[in-house]
Image (tube, rainbow, N blue to C red):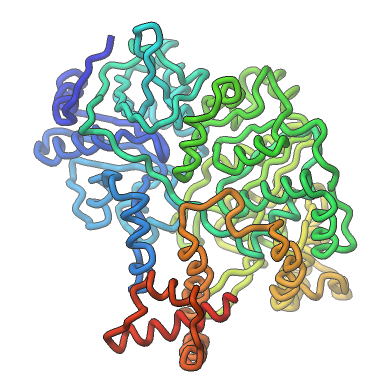
Length: 613
């Protein structure tokens, strides 16, 4: 049986006594980090420089940090409400302050998107890896400890423990240990909020070397609130929803586009006539998959998130494979998502199986069974940019700075080419804001995540580009058709100048009105009818906060263009707030401004609220 501790420092001392002073510690990706154990090991290594401590991690979670005064006024109470009791990870703070001791090293293979840009230690110690390769890299480095947050259940007087949110790499590493190819101590920290998930991550106590369990080390799970789904993202999600075949297999990446795709599928299933109408408005000349789901879909996704529960509830995710409708490898989501998993009836929860990432992300091992299960598979993931010739830029910039990581994206692209009838769908917004709006579809770029020889399907708010098996000229033409029309002439010129597009080529008339205004107009009836809600799967934000979010987004965009900010200020001088606006101003403590700065903020917010209406 494992040793049971109530004091984090005591369990850290026990680990060092049993393992030694050279510690190579594997931390789960995202939610499953045993924060108290990690911090105790960190403190011990700070105090004793003879201890050589390496953390191998991914997706270190940190509380949001407001970047300006208005953000602070808005997000401050949200942080207190949603993250107030979450213990910060000491190593993350030390990296940001450039105070990491020389005997401690932190390697990550996936970052929270954009959060570690221009942080030298994080960027220098980043390891570029496919999700499925991370376990082997850990073993090669001499892994000797895994710390993990676990759920606990007592069955017939015997305690059992669930890996819950992170079966991903831990199950793969435990398999190598069982085969005698690895030796490490598995350390658990019990958390009562963590859902107890059935399946291969349901472990006996003797799998653990030690466990930390105490009321003093309980903490609320990290629960990022769902973000609002914009018109742009809804258009992308709807286009992708029109590609999914009934009876097939679905994988979705996290984010608002994933939420938009799921809501699009739900609309297609529950309100088919309305779905067909909105698709006709978006792409009048395009035939899409539009029938409701009679056979249903089977889910295979490295990440389980709230949208999948929505698809289950809607009766879409229902095609069973060995009694399972969804296999996943890790999860993360808002508080309501964790509650839904904890409260789900056992017979329904049993249809969601948490697996090793080698199962979800690869075909190797049980390949024949996987091929039979993963029929008509569509793997839908996000990318930041794409080139006209079909390369995708998803994880970093051309100067080497890492935005996030490769994660499982390559794994799913590879599966799409290996499975009969499968497709890789990479989604992206056609433009990005800034001081000057820029195109996310580029002629070329000095970094690639997915090379052009693996080009398949790209989706923007303006439509779908099917590039598989196409010539370069045809691929370029298809990408131009889904680019924003403000950038089409210059992109086309670059392709022609490079000799990759015939001089006489012209973009079809149907694709020359690719503008944000057209998207807003196309979606407005569906938005007004409630078919495409801002938060399709609920929100932790209050009604007032939900009203404020679009206004603050308008201000955030205006900050990058001073002329727009000046225009909003001028509009604010004549804006008359209604009762709902007054509630928003009070939420930001701008209802009774006392300084010139507060008066200026009030005017800007009033103008932005007017635009939001």
